[in-house]
Length: 404
Image 1 (cartoon, one colour):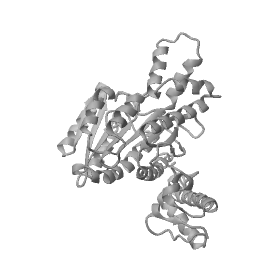
Image 2: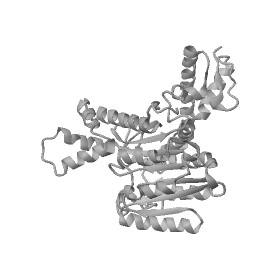
Image 3: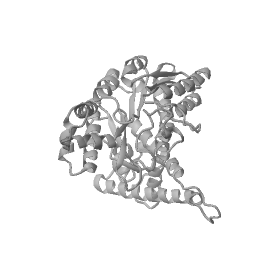
Image 4: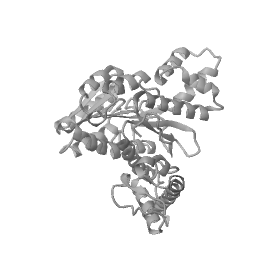
């Protein structure tokens, strides 16, 4: 997965909650009163992934320093005190402070949100955490953050409300300024690609109405996508669903090819039967990133499902909470069964293969849901049944699955 042309298949997650990132809104917005279930997934991914990322790549950097950038940070906490992404990351920075320095940069343009964010950052600084609050648009501060990130690994979380940074800023400025190396120069991005914006702005193409700012909005979309190619994709699509899928896939492919990165697309919905609200796009230049991110997404979904549980009813004999753990076990059994079938399909096709070389195929149908432990469980079951000579013990990625 080090090649720029390899793209992981979609891991589709049906989420309930808000239809856009919580960033870019003033903290007086009702959005910031309490965390919605959809935000749980994003935040859990960050919690589950940033520390493993920092732990792994930080060993190559001077003083174990890893730079974290949140380009649309918001106020840092919800009004009910629940941590937003900045508060969560600062907690993680404190947790790993003994062996890694997570140097955090939070950018926020809204005055009231920035005021709350700055207070949160000041509290972190007093605890010895390297943290910085910057007010304004991402593009205003991006250059100085990237300059300070020279010689250190960088993870950027870009979760705008609507259109975010331009394609040029993403590919040439962020990735392009850091070369193609990994290790101490590792560069990874988790980006919110807003499907609602694609549908709304794409609708202008088929409208004959004199809409104020229409041309400027279309040009802004061109800048975000890296050209007007998306207009042809939108017009050629049968409906909005196809348009969003085609444009997101092509955008992901273009970014990956431009910067030499593999990508992972996670579709986020408000409800299972609703259209996609946005995609979380993850870009990495190293195979290790895909493995770590896959586990992070899987673990994050568990917490998202827990957050979606309905509150227990008074006098109810049973509640969803009571059956949650059992339902999770059932899901895991189904994932293992799917992985077994995938492995056996590869055995028939290839004879023998290593796990690391075929992650997308092994996880087909459960990518973004299952994780490494489920692959190992599937291999061990096949071994016990005499269907492979591999016993599933040892470094999972190096396991060589043989046919019997």
